[in-house]
Amino acid sequence: MSKITKEMTIMDVLTKDKESAAVFMKYGLHCLGCPGATMESIEDAGKVHGIDVGNLVEDLNKHFEKVK
Image (tube, rainbow, N blue to C red; front, side, top):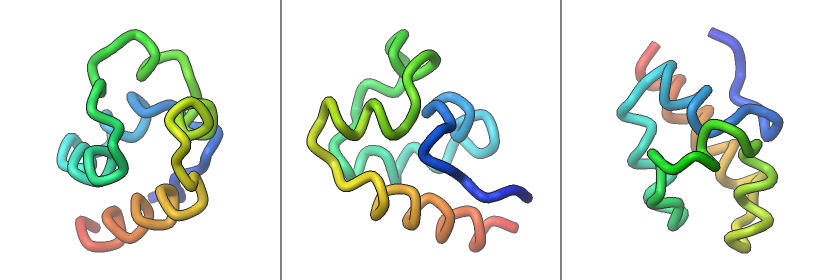
């Protein structure tokens, strides 16, 4: 499986595994079904919400390592 990157949209990631929603929720990204989730990159969403995108992407990749 390819690595999760900050350029991907939230929906790109959720499509790979809906259980990854828990990682987004941990970082305060609760509006996973809103239009922004399909259009904005993870990096853009992180900037809007004041989230450390590097840590978020790292945790998402750790999640996907576990579900391989």
